[in-house]
Image 1 (cartoon, rainbow, N blue to C red):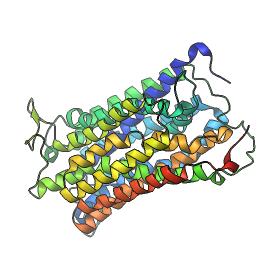
Image 2 (image 1 turned 90 degrees about the horizontal axis):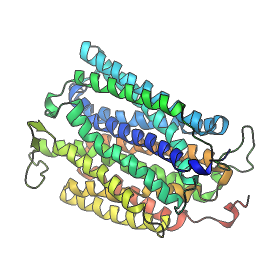
Image 3 (image 1 turned 120 degrees about the horizontal axis):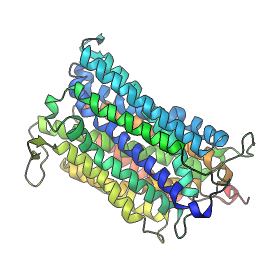
Image 4 (image 1 turned 30 degrees about the vertical axis):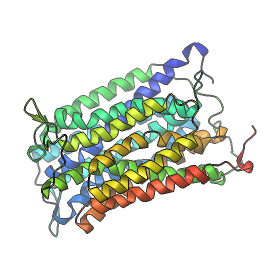
Length: 440
């Protein structure tokens, strides 16, 4: 099946809006780490940081386990059916969040005790919900990335279309930190938040996603020709035999690892600095109080980081003459420098600025990785999405190192290593070998 000429824009808009929802809820999940650390994990003893980062770990575990399943669904059932299944998983994950909040509010004393650690059952239910949310995000991204990259809009390149879609996604990631701070927890101090405050906002989120699912079910979302194998069709080569794709999967593993680690942990580092008497300041102020509500420096850090994604993707969507390889080379080089400066100076604003540079990396790596794969594209997208598990590995690893070191400061060395590995992919690994070029 192919798209009809008169419907060129509408399917693109539909898929892009659903990707906005994914970005919004992904960041909501990350931003709940700090509030849940102070509510669910107040008695977690020496494992507070490690347990807190399990929220992100289980979210991205959903990518690892279910990314390839989603690509099989695309091949068998098509793009629309697969994206609907992803939305249903999202509703299930939000429902688990609701149960978690209810259990934490009504029976907070139930949980697991060992050594100096107490883990409430409500927290365990929440990380299971996080896994379902990650599964939903993985399924939807398996659809969105190849769909947008292969969808023909006059006068655009694949990396441009991906940057447009991810720019809209970034609106969600940018607004999510303040949604958590102002809507979910009413702008009160992080030390005073209550788990019961999650019940109403989560109920509204469930209703919203349910409405989007029903609307999508009744809309026309056509397939795109030559981007997936027919049901039962055997492909002659193994995906991993395409070197530029295999190395691209590794590059995205490291990219998402550092992208998520910064977004999820920068606010925890900010709290640490405040606890040690060196709070972050914004134009000389260590608190942002507007209308009696504490907006929080930590929320501003995260918002500026994710806001950089929105600005960078919006700007780069006009780069029709700048190749993905060039964009990736420049951004990874500058990100390495900023991460080093942030560690040395302990100025987290430099880390936040990396968001502007991270903004185009996903689009660049994905478009370079699937270039020329044709019927292998949808299958490649599933494997590619599984590499997003890097967000779980590096976030958890950094949390563990913070507990070992007693500080978050030097744990940002992880970011430096990841940026340098992505730079090497831009310079060398993304080049397509002659034997990897598919003619038909």
